[in-house]
Image 1 (cartoon, rainbow, N blue to C red):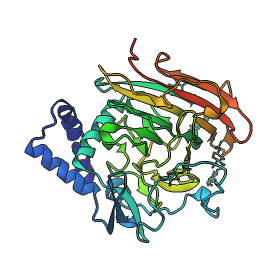
Image 2: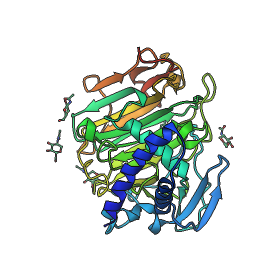
Image 3: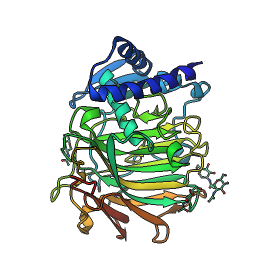
Image 4: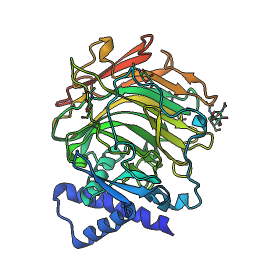
Length: 386
Ligand SMILES: *[C@@H]1O[C@H](CO)[C@@H](O)[C@H](O)[C@H]1NC(C)=O
Ligand SMILES: *[C@@H]1O[C@H](CO)[C@@H](O)[C@H](O)[C@H]1NC(C)=O
Ligand SMILES: *[C@@H]1O[C@H](CO)[C@@H](O)[C@H](O)[C@H]1NC(C)=O
Ligand SMILES: *[C@@H]1O[C@H](CO)[C@@H](O)[C@H](O)[C@H]1NC(C)=O
Ligand SMILES: *[C@@H]1O[C@H](CO)[C@@H](O)[C@H](O)[C@H]1NC(C)=O
């Protein structure tokens, strides 16, 4: 059975990753194992595109994408549209918002194919390092600082959305995220999906801000990964792909650019990621089987640092300054079991800020149209463990 093969690979690679971080030398066996894994996730392309950011995107037959190798998706019927979007037009009028450009031009991938960012051996190694850091119980090779607006246990959440301002903080070590998430379960076996943008020079080997998504069923112990590093996410859109770089980024005191993101459950419990109102793809219920009734959602930032290094900047790199137009998240909303769209009210949320010395979060609540419910988060980083 395929499943038995996949598990040892992940375990092995976590092991490899920990060794590789010390000395980036692979034995022949380790090398072969990575080659084998690469073959599993890099499918024969119908067409390949070299992006201007340096990475390669393969156009893969939509029915032959790597996720359909997952044993839990053997009998899966591909969904082209979430049930909640059927009958609606795909794109709203975004002429009023300055949205960052992202993805391939429409039509770059031939009809019937979807863009999947090609993985390299280095990507696999580095992605295990990222996950190691996310694992709540993992050895602390990294420090992780969160600045989150989080909601718990009010309802079973069925959706979360918001417009995230995109910046492009520059640094060498660690990684920084701006994202939203749904969680369920105990910390060490957490079930989770997260999506947003991130800068991770180690993993992407560039300083760009990248659109990303992660999932796990067990606190990243054996299941889950980032982007397409393991089977899981089903790609539907022919333009925006996970790991794509964002073309336009905000500058403090200058132009602001955002991405409009939503993570929504359909009536079959699949979780859909949409950007600018357009569906990117979904995590099938069979894969994220413990997220039918998530009890935690949140928005905000995370900064990871190597234990002896400076922590990277988060979001704009500045502490919240209370100026409306500097909001990091606007129009934040969530949905409950009854599909009602709601906003975080004062009694229902908590603010998690692991290092007030380095990062901040200020919730502004309702700013009226067009900003809606907003908050600011971020900070310069530095030496954060007091
Ligand atoms: C919520 O929306 C989904 C998708 O449109 C629909 O199938 C489901 O019946 C709705 N649930 C409720 C309680 O309205
Ligand atoms: C929410 O539920 C979880 C699991 O049932 C529990 O551990 C946690 O303490 C609850 N949180 C709050 C704020 O009630
Ligand atoms: C969430 O869903 C579970 C499973 O259906 C149910 O037992 C629980 O009562 C629900 N919780 C809330 C707060 O509605
Ligand atoms: C966004 O980036 C694209 C590609 O670099 C550029 O052509 C476009 O002018 C930028 N948009 C704005 C509003 O600056
Ligand atoms: C946020 O996204 C919504 C939905 O696409 C859009 O209509 C709105 O203009 C955006 N809001 C802001 C403040 O940019």
